[in-house]
Image 1: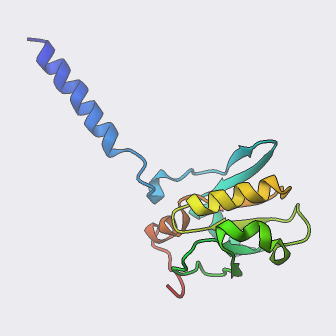
Image 2 (image 1 turned 45 degrees about the horizontal axis):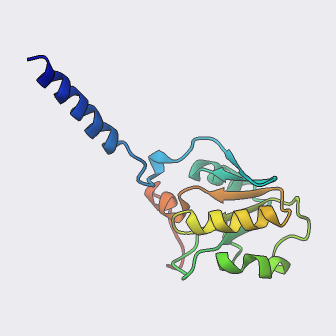
Image 3 (image 1 turned 90 degrees about the vertical axis):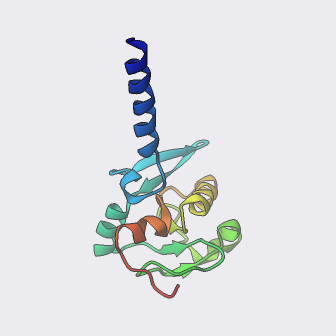
Length: 145
């Protein structure tokens, strides 16, 4: 008799756990910066809230790496396709210690671009975790999409 209630508890716990699974939404984003290693190099994932704070005193290029184009975040400086960023370094700061913030739609293309830049010696690369989907889920506007 005690097996049925225990089984119900286990199944209920699994169902609740699945409901809380990371679906890429804004609530699933890290609250603080998270550094990610790329071999010997690193880049940092940032949340929407962190990017908003950074934009208040913007001192970095904000680069959309998503292809095809689906819109920009406010204050985007330019777009570079994620898979061509190594060939377009002339558009980025010459100082490889300068801050650069990348984003795409969901975060996967910008992760690839951030990894590429980190491997090329850029030391202050930031990636918007969740991309512009997270930005929109936070109720923030896009431009030109």
